[in-house]
Length: 331
Image (cartoon, rainbow, N blue to C red; front, side):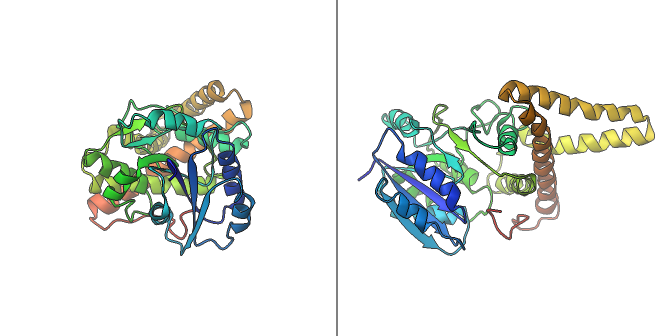
């Protein structure tokens, strides 16, 4: 029986999966298995799995497309590890990832852990810029990176580990299409289980590679935050409203420019200059820092607009849980 089971949902991402499996094959700690769940892909990844069948202990499962949460639940049912580790197919793991995790869970003084993510030096410019936007203190307060200061730490499913006994007691992930990982962490904490941020156990996360799909992702995240607040009263924090205030602030500047003075439009330079300077300091790359401005605006406007729609539809109109851009989660 392995100590760890990596569970990976996949949808039409065989090339990315191959890169992830390569990094798993290089892990310095070897007591683990890999459970891959093909979530209704039109282009299955069996050839990639065959390539690594002699290097890794792999279980390959298939199901109709149901989304990542149900796919992870399917994988967990077949997993044999004492700890389940959920990672996304677009992640890469440093060679010592599992070695670090094993050192931390050895004492078992926590029930669930998560780690930060960061862009790999070999990622393209857009991926690095989006990675900055999703982890920067200027855009998300750092709560998706390696900081816990602005909110309770909720492990997220691109890098989440949980004891199998706890996962079973929790009943796995819920039927939420978006925000299911936060819902899981919130339910876990409500039941008295503990979480831990292992800062050294980071993954290289590619995320989306174009702004259109990135916008859809963060828009749904904004809606999901309202859905989560309704499911878990009191989890909505002031930091979550910042993107919406950012959207409103830009609208207010336009109104001032129209009815007071066009000089107010100069205020639009503040955010790009600040973000570019900060991104340059963080990444050391001029090209990435320039694109980071576009990524930051996409992140804040996408999340903020989704948050506003969720607030209106759920809180004001009182309608049922919903999400946008729902034709396919992975696109």
